[in-house]
Image 1 (tube, rainbow, N blue to C red):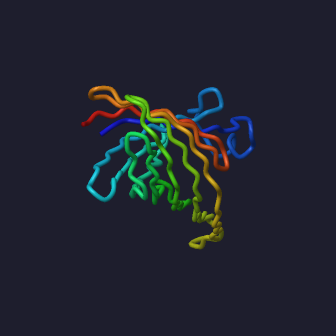
Image 2 (tube, one colour; image 1 turned 135 degrees about the horizontal axis):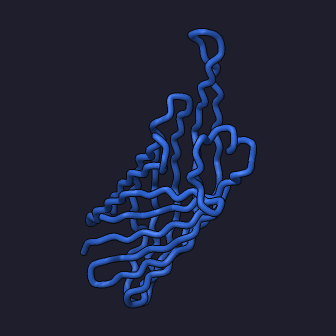
Image 3 (cartoon, helix red, strand yellow; image 1 turned 90 degrees about the horizontal axis):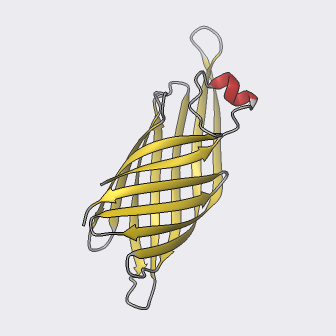
Length: 182
């Protein structure tokens, strides 16, 4: 179990931002999105779930992932794993968004430190609903694929674990997570 925050860059002076966001919840041109995260390891995979709420908005993001090791690491060898992920945005009656992804993770622990890197592909399915004439709407749909590159470091102490990472996709984001477990 843990809590995480992902910082996502936004251009707060851009027209789309000033016309669509009625309140200013960006700090230094970044929006911080807090998440609750739960993970459970099984003998063949690790299953994770997350819930995020965008500050000062009704937007929520539910997500999940499954990590399956392809090569189990050892004292001298790294771990190679495949991750499949899914998320859905809720809280907007005018916008639907779902994302899917697959990534290949490579990691190697050195005592309490585990650096890792990942490369993957994600797809977003977005639909915007714009009111048009009375009782009708116009739907705009977009499906977009993008590459993702991630580097991070997990610090495992006795009980808390701290993870910091940077991900480059369409935009660069930064995340930090503190979790508790054994």
